[in-house]
Image 1 (tube, chains in turn red, brown, cyan):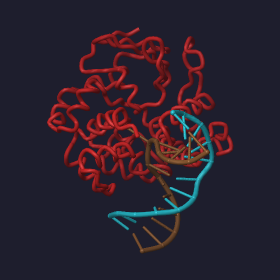
Image 2: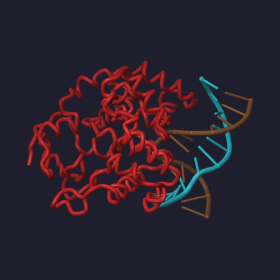
Image 3: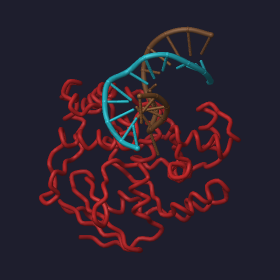
Image 4: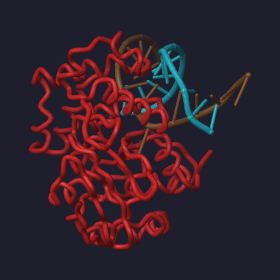
Length: 278
DNA sequence: AGCCAGGCTAAGA
DNA sequence: TCTTAGCATGGC
């Protein structure tokens, strides 16, 4: 068991903001599968407790929760914005995770034209059917299936999951990754623009999904995913209720939020999901 | 019951 | 470059 002293960190906001799909609430804390390990995490004040099986290192925990980044320093410039200020205050401590690129990519392929609760169900069922069991006392915990595993499947095999039209997007993308035609590791090393362009070549991956992967798996803080909620937020809070084209919204966000665009997006998203429902 | 969801693709202006 | 239809499915 690990105990970490954490500052500027809120576990609930971080895990419930919808960036990751495999965490579920337990009596006290959350249970999820990270890589090949089951994690049980809880927070009391500035103490983060992590029980994992097989055990994860402190470095892995720090990496996953982005605990080494200086959140205060990142958010301070954003707080000058009168729209973001209350959102940042309310969700203070929300950190952008560093998820596994393949799991993140596959999960967000499932996200298109879908709602959060069903995305979670899809990801959970996919893992249950095609992942491998993990954790001795985790009971019914499964890893997220590898690209290789999924590449061996047909849409028919996915039927029990009921992913709808997204089935072939997932399988074709899995094939490209498994066959080495698409190098997820390389995305760490190339420029953001290049990385996005590369992601856009994958079936089922458009601007929004690409931005999510860049932000939630690769820590590219200049990525600004625009979904229906963020579009609504921008329109209502920045554009006086008027529509803007996707490209204009992107340009606006990049210019306004710079290298903290990813965090601006997440706090906006959390804020509108809570206050702008319907 | 019926609307809508962390969009993408293809086609057409 | 922008707009639009169609999409499988189930949550609410």
